Amino acid sequence: MLMRTFLPTLIAAVSISSMTLIAQTNAPTKGTLVLGILTIESSYAQNKEQPSKGVPDTVQFWIASDKAWRIRTYATDHDIHPYSMGDLGKQPTEFATDHIKKHYSDVLASTLVLEFSDISDTNAVRQVLAQHNLKGSLEVAKVGFAFWNPDDGHYKSQTSPK
Image (tube, rainbow, N blue to C red; front, side, top):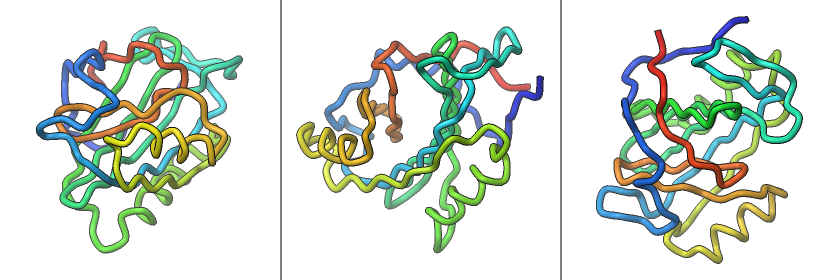
C-alpha cells in the first residue's frame, strides 16, 4: 500500500484532547476548511488501508488569515498528522483543492470548501456542517488549526511520517 505523505513540518504529539469547539488563545476565529473525504479508512502505523465502511480518512487544509495547515486523518486508529504550511499565496483555496486532487484522486470521494465566519459560535459551525451534510464536529487546536472530526472520536498524533 502506498502511504501518501507530503509536505514536511509535522507538528508532533498533537493531542486532540487539547482541542475544543471554542476558539482558544492561539486558535483562529475564522477560516476556510478545504476538506477531502476519502473512500478509504486506514492506519498509518499498521501500513494498511481498506475501503471505508463508515468513518473515512480525510485530507484537510485549514486556511486562516495568517497561515494554513494541512491535516491528514487516519480513521482506523484515529491518528492525525497536522502540518504547518505557512502562507499558501494569493489563491490558497485553489492550492489546497489542486493538492488534494493531485495526490488523492485515486481514493477521493469528494472535496468540499467550508467557510467559517466565527468558529467560536457553535450554532454557526453546526449550520455550516449541516449545509454540507456532515456529521461530527469541527475541532479547534490551540496551536492554530481546525479540522473536521467525522465521528467525534479522540484523534491524536500517534505516528510520525517517514
